[in-house]
Every structure is written in structure tokens, then in C-alpha cells.
Amino acid sequence: MVDEQQRSGQVGDQLAFAARPGIGEKLLNAVNHLGIDLHAEPARALALAEVLCGAAQVDDELDPDESETVHLELRTLLGLETLPPELTRHVRTFSRSRFDLVDALSRLRLSDLAHKKALMRSVRAVLKADAVYRDTERDYFQRLAHTLRLSPTDID
Image (cartoon, rainbow, N blue to C red; front, side, top):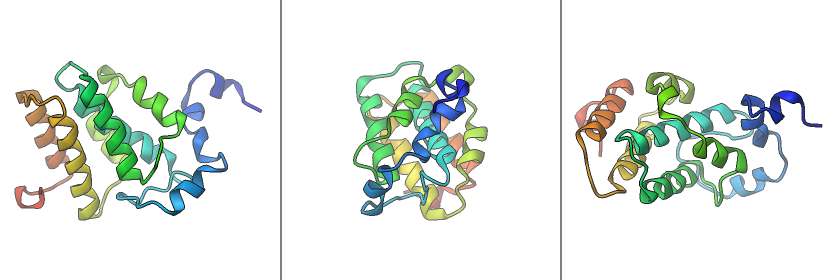
């Protein structure tokens, strides 16, 4: 039974995909580039979506190519054929005005250098998706690298 918190669109609704049977089968055969287990750590997947959405909207414009790239990069990083509806909804309802990169990265909890590099490649793909690279996008990328404690030689 769905409780009131889930119907109201709170965190419980956003994380409902973690307990739903059937998703695991698609994950078992996929490569998960960040080591995120959707069943055990759904909040990390939501934080990942926020980091990518933040990149897409950092220039105050959301180009259709950027939106498509966010979905593609999420599927790639999480090793999914399709995104769970709750994660798709989280992307669709993302609000840059409430976004905090440092907070999202702390919830994402990446410690492995390979995982950090994979995230940086995905963010770069999102930033380049509209074929225009603005100062705000460069600043976002640099702030992300700094927050992840990556050196210039760590970034592919």
C-alpha cells in the first residue's frame, strides 16, 4: 500500500524503485560504472541524476540534446537499459535553484578514482551536448573536479 509520503512526491516516492522486484534482473547483466546498487543505495542514483542535471542546466538553458544526454549518461553509468520511472521523474522535476553540488556529491559518495573519472566524462558529455561551451559550464566542470579532489592529470 502506498503511504501519504509516497503519494505526495516526497523522498519515499523517489526511492520506491529500490524495493520494486524486476529491476534487479536488468542490473545483473549490465556494467555499472559507479558501483551503485539501486536496491541498496537508491539515494546515490538520485544524487547522480542531480549532478548531471546540474550540468545540463548550469547555463540556464536546457537544450533537448542535453536532456537526452543526461538520460543516456545515467543509463550508461548505472548499467541500465531503461531508467526506472522514479529516476526519470527525479530528472524531469530537477530544480537548479534548489541544487547544491557539494551536497549532491556528498550523497553520491565516490571515493574510487575510476568512478570519479567516469562521472567527469559523463558531465563533460552533458556539457558538450548542445555544442556550445560557456563560461558557466567550464566553471561547473572545474568546481566538480575540485570538489572531487581531482588534479588536471586525473581528468581524461
